[in-house]
Amino acid sequence: MTATVTDVKTIKIEQGVALVTLTRPHVMNALNIQLREEIMQLARDLDANPDVNVIVITGAGDKAFCAGADLKERGKRTPDELYNERRFFRGKWVNAVASMAKPTIAAINGYCLGGGLELALQCDLRLASDNARFGLPEVTLGFLPGAGGTQRLPREIGVQKAKELILTGRTFDAHEAERLGVVLRVVPQAQLMLAATELARAIAKNPRMSLIQAKLAINASQETMLSGGLQAENEAWIPCLLSDVWKEKLQRFQD
Ligand code: CO8
Image (cartoon, rainbow, N blue to C red):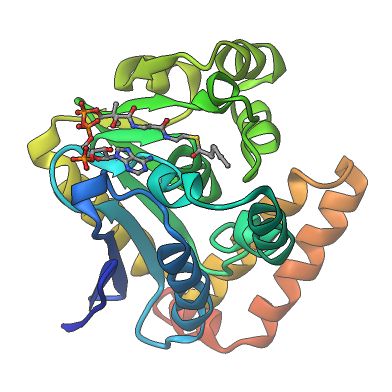
């Protein structure tokens, strides 16, 4: 196992799975600039790391996955600073994790609010502990979810339900999140990391090429019409054919 620790996150890599822990528990793992920059860098590094097939993201402590933007930090900035920062981050942060080639899982272990939920929505799969609470409260603060929330939530759960949640800004519990399809599954808090690791390993044991190409093709289904999606699926299939992996995998079926 390899481990890397910074002020705001830790990464442990074991059996093809990178576990990334947001470690700012004193502020509910809120996203300050440093943490967002490190996640953007990390997304590139883990995609390139040959020891990693799947990435799991969670929050330190037992209270929060991530309570969104660091409001202490944001509150100190001028509109000019916020605007310039946004120009820099726009198109980078909103896709940093979503654009990773490898599969990603959010293990949501408590509050998952605002930018924290938007980060989770960038992940391919989301598991929640039974104490998790969700919400996009931006409109209650005079803003709107501006890190992908208005686009990814409706795609995940439908337009009407997304409008209700975003326009009221209300919070909801893990079971409602499961019913709505915000998360795949809810598990008791004590079992969350075990469940996330088992799911990650079940994926990570498959050939990396297949994982990457399958994710690419599924993502295309959300961006194109059926004909374009089927074309993308075909294009994703060809690199698998050109790899030798399938030959090894089919060996045992040969006479
Ligand atoms: N940013 C910074 N600090 C935070 C945040 C946050 N998002 N959330 C919690 N904290 C801090 C608290 O201030 C507190 O610090 P301190 O000990 O110094 O007072 C510490 O974490 C513990 O929090 P609480 O004492 O409040 O713990 P509770 O269990 O009572 O409540 C909650 C937990 C419900 C999570 C509560 O802390 C809360 O409501 N937090 C804010 C959640 C939120 O609204 N997040 C922002 C969502 S919007 C977004 O992400 C996009 C940006 C929107 C505005 C942009 C403006 C330019």
